[in-house]
Image 1 (cartoon, rainbow, N blue to C red):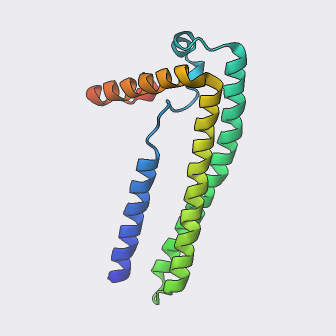
Image 2: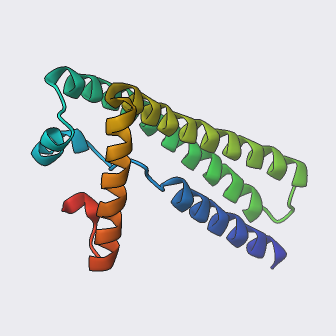
Length: 148
């Protein structure tokens, strides 16, 4: 019973941590392909190309890193399903899982920094405010801001 409770706590913590880590300062996806965004932020074709290259590079990394997080999570869950819980193995596996999550968060942040470098401070701050307003409007309307 205690093992199941600990497993549930770890899983909820994992989901909550993932949800909190998803708090985005900039829009999701290829927001720079939206004509309204291109015009609003006066994006040049060179900047669009830079954003595309950065997105592809980051996306490729994120796919592998998400897979690693899932694998480490699965391995941890498997340890908790054993009749006898090996605490050392569980802590070691927990460390691996947190290391994988950190690598994932670091890659997200790396893309965030790249966007900042491409846009410069002024347009980057405008983008953050723009995205915040879109998210607030979506919450009020109970819609997904990505689909607006």
